[in-house]
Amino acid sequence: MLLVKNLSAGYGGADVIRDINLSVSHGELLCIVGPNGCGKSTLLKTLLKLLPFRGDVFIEGLALPALSRKALAKKAAFLGQSQELYFPYSVRTTVSLGRYAFANGIFHSLSKTDEEIINSVIEQLGLGGFENRSIAELSGGQLQRVFLARALAQTPRLILLDEPTNHLDLKYQLELLCFLKQWVRENKTTALVVLHDLNLVQNFADTALVMRSGLIAAHGKPHDVLSESVLRDVYETDVHRFMLDSLSHWQNTGA
Image (cartoon, rainbow, N blue to C red):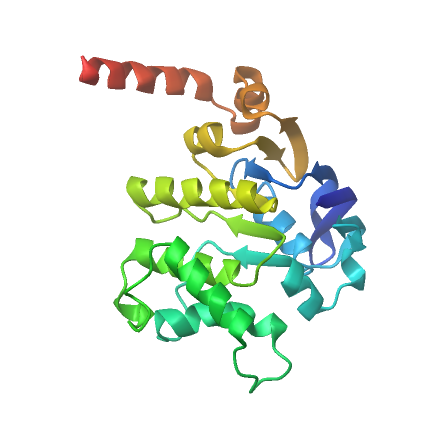
């Protein structure tokens, strides 16, 4: 699905990520972790062709530079950290914006296929009955589901999510990631998800990518790469001990 070779990118001529080599398969949910400023968001922006880069990126065999904005939108969708700036459209109108890449013009009306896709993602994400409500009236969890529905309405082959569980309570975090994992598997698509919560990574990721200072520190199965030595080196603290101490507190509570 995604092949990255010797990728470097950054801002103002200074590289933030360097020499990234990565291969991600169809049906794979890859979680990207690492301390603040290590290049996680920069990597996603580069894969969306939002930053100049050196190296090679291929999405289903197509070179990223050769894809127009519209062609890329048919292949990849993005859900960012926050959606604080938005127009107070209805839920349905907001989700329908995901079909823009398939329109023939700015005044193009929705086709029967468009309508079917919009209806499907609205139902899948539990937004049925909310279609006509303004998104300004929704809770944070509901709003995040609307924006995820908009991304999925693009019918992407690749979806990039930058801290999608940010500001969500535990219930909505689990629901969003459960849905995403199921969607990836059933549709043989691919998801790259930036997360900070290592517990969520252990539970939901097929593979994990650990970054440090713009470089890949480890890449593989979560139980392999989220090791005591890797986490201590990357986060400069004993994450493993902290997790075990936290678990003991929960066990004592349960007893």
